[in-house]
Image (cartoon, rainbow, N blue to C red):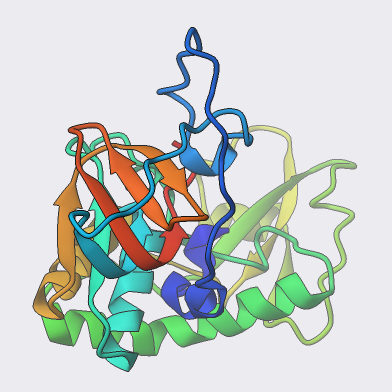
Length: 256
């Protein structure tokens, strides 16, 4: 779902102080648990901020697509300083493994606010792509031609699916037609839905471009692992012993 939209646009409204966390038991090793998944007993409370603690205006924890796109969008609409904290090794972040589908119809989302949001986001991607590529000179691998095929097997949820009215072009193809578009489909395919409006982006190229866009916009980058967050004092502790205080903290470190 994170790939359906220029994520930063969706997160701008959610920059709020976070809650205070209480210390874990001394014997607990929770270094593998992402900050956003940690319960109140999982994060060590960072020390109260003092005059010696470096102060940031907006501090974003996470250097994946969510964190970078938010930092980029904020950089265009505020004079406040923006800092993104991400780990030294970003080779295993989800953004580099995502398939990049901009395909709410292929996902067969039901009628409702989520589908509406994803359809609007999909339509916004062409303009978003042009902006990022023009600024950075880097391609993000956006593809909006050809659409997506959802193959169907007898009696499965794809064959019985009824497209939501008004969600975009959706055509049922019989077995012969669907194999004309994709000859290498497996045995047992009885047809499929073709969604001409669905698109895709190369998440690795998008991450590289957003990384450069943030640099061009003057976003500060800190490479370190976060070990503690304190909502009361608005401080973030790092594995190397540093501690930052911020006016606003955004946790965008995803599932890792």
